[in-house]
Image (tube, rainbow, N blue to C red; front, side, top):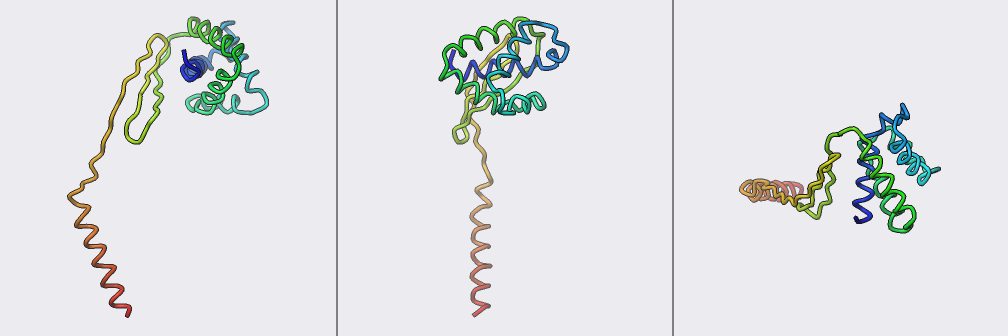
Length: 149
C-alpha cells in the first residue's frame, strides 16, 4: 500500500468513526484516534479535522508525509487503521479526486469497498458563440477608441 493510500484509508476510517470516539466505545477506534492525534500534536490540524471531518485534505497530506518518512509510524498506522476499520460500523462513501487538467483518477472508498476509476471530462463552452462575441467586443473597442480621438 502506498503512503497516499494508507493516509487516505486512515482519514476515511477516522472521519467515519469520530462520533464513536466521543463515547470511547471500541479500543481499536480509540487507538487509531490517539495515534494520529499524538502524531499531529501541537499543530491544531487534528482538532480542525475533528470539527469538520468532511475536510480531511490537510490531515491526509500530513499523514502521507509522515508515512513516507517514518517506517515505524507507517507500520503502526497501517495496523491501527485495519483494526479500527474492522471494528467500525459500516459507513458511507467518500471520493478523492486527483486531477490533471480535466482528467483524473476517482477513488470511491467505503468500509468494505475501494474502487478506482479513471474519468475524463470535457466541456464545450459553445464555441459557435465565442467568435461572434469576440468580433462584437473588438468592434465596440474600436468604435470607442475612434470616438475618443
